[in-house]
Image (tube, rainbow, N blue to C red; front, top):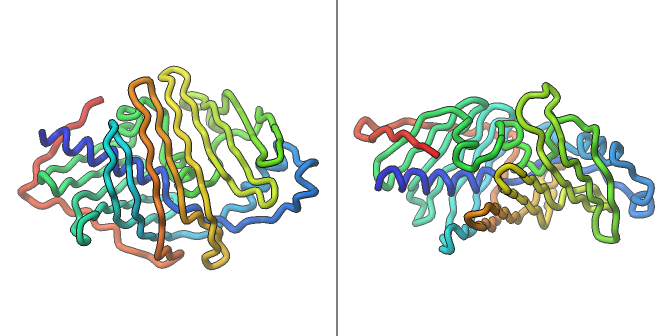
Length: 270
């Protein structure tokens, strides 16, 4: 039972990590110029739009639909760019029930509901979701950025009245490590904001779709205040709807992860 509870808490936390605010200073692109944009130009604009912040924190609330059941969730999120991601889930009267600290090579989870914890490496993400996700991909997903460590070559641009679509069926990392990904980016042609980031894993027939809405300007950075994540596999379709508030940028926050002595170490498997 304890093992199942920890795994369930981790699934909720991972959903959150895929959906938090996008911090980026947007470069406007006039609508009449959208017809002339190329795939490489669009990718270059996305890169230029990325912000230079180092710290970020936010409050969140929303719901997750998992295995045909809907659960309300709320809590806080903190991030030190290129270093660590911290999530605390506290849905009832601000009482924390779980927290996670993910770094470039580690995953730590604390479940206060049954006094258990997990310590492991980033590969746990891939075992749980049958994917090939690294820390930079995870960070880029909740920042609504493109993946900076993947090659730009191979994208095909499609256009209609509502969005620009960049698609690459076999996008590779710059170091050629890991598996190629089948990625689609949907962009707003007026300002080149990312509307959706869609990743399809053919081997497992798994799709992760992140949709970003209602961008707000916070200290010169455009952040979506609402997001939706859809995770679909052969076994199930789950979704997460999130709203964000009280977001701050470049205000360092603590990321404490202390395990009480009476907590039990849990080993997770696929």
